[in-house]
Length: 117
Length: 112
Image (tube, rainbow over all chains, first blue to last red; front, side, top):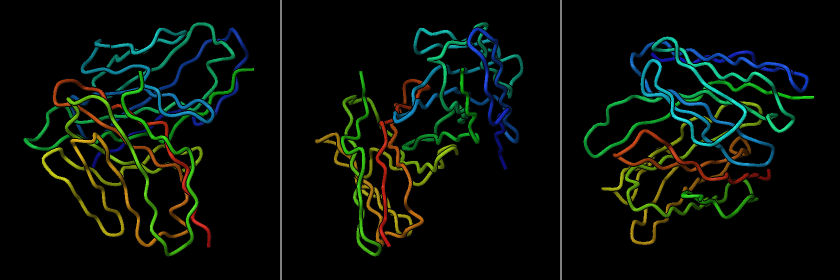
């Protein structure tokens, strides 16, 4: 079966410090990968998605970047964190090909709480 | 622009009664819809989905209804249980594209 892991689960970082959140998926190959953020009291905002190694699409302009160095690894980074980067970050994956008259499910990791102080 | 909307931020229901969570969408290209349940500080977990070729899908206590003409879907939970208390997100996807669009969530509280 497929599993997804992301880490660290919690981190407190000072303003201006760098960030690296990592995510790996097991049990599948060539998945679509996603980074979402849930700010306090708000919905799930798509930050980045990737359909393959080195292929990153950004949904919103921001202080963050993403990379996909391997097929099942997705990394969220920042060179200098802002207070507004605080939130709950979620990595997710889905299959790439759809079945006829159906769709794909997106599966989420456990999440990473980031507090920028 | 929010393409998937959940206009009720919160809902309270007595244990044993029906919970109805609503979701509206604007993009007519969406053809697959999903509901997720989320506890605090955890990732959302998949509950149930429905394809646009259907108008109802049932899984145990959970039923999702789709009204394509109204661009509206709803999740019914019967009977509601205290363990159902969580935030529920609806999501939509289109055959063309790789993205999932989420609503802002509805916080359900089931009162014992």
